[in-house]
Image 1: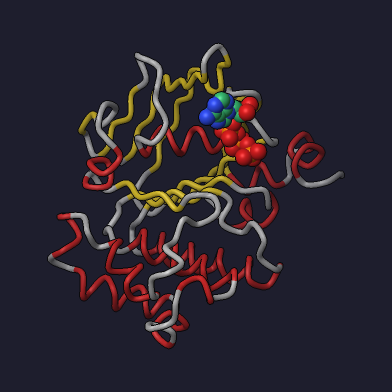
Image 2: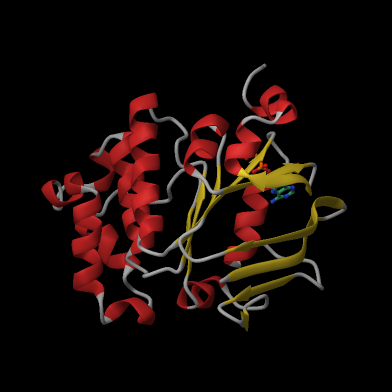
Length: 236
Ligand code: ATP
């Protein structure tokens, strides 16, 4: 469904990403692991059209080359990003934030059905529809951010550090929700610090070091790979 090939990002003279290739299928969960500054956020931003790509980078979505499209047109092609820090509108209510997500033309016709799915996934959002987003707890704000992205009816949902700042229990619940979303056929590409939890949920993983993919494999195998254990899982 999503195919990325030879993707590169450069900030001035600094090469942040080089020669990145990956693909995500329908309903698949794929996690990208890497140290701070490895280029994980740049990768999601580049796919979403928010960060400029080097010429020769290709992003193909459902068979269409979307490499040169602006961010809002990439959303129309079915790619949604939940950015690090969530990026929700604090002064707007939960319901308003969700409505903003349904702005894409691909989403409008089915907005009521999608909203029912979001409320089913996160009942707390239905209970707090009229509450200002900024007064929600961290975990609830993450639900708003994911709900808003889902309202655009994506085929691919990308999440940048979704468990950041959440308690272990909330993180676990969050990953359960991601599995439910994937079961709907949505492909998930996520960047995570919590390597253990994300590899337990994901189907596949990629390891990024200084802008390059240095390893990839089935999540279950990565979870037991000694190099991964040392670098990302805190020891043997
Ligand atoms: P973290 O987990 O710390 O957020 P990351 O893996 O997501 O890291 P990126 O944020 O993608 O890494 O950054 C990759 C590299 O590019 C870093 O060295 C960073 O300093 C640099 N970088 C990112 N954004 C810019 C920018 N706008 N201008 C210049 N350099 C940047």
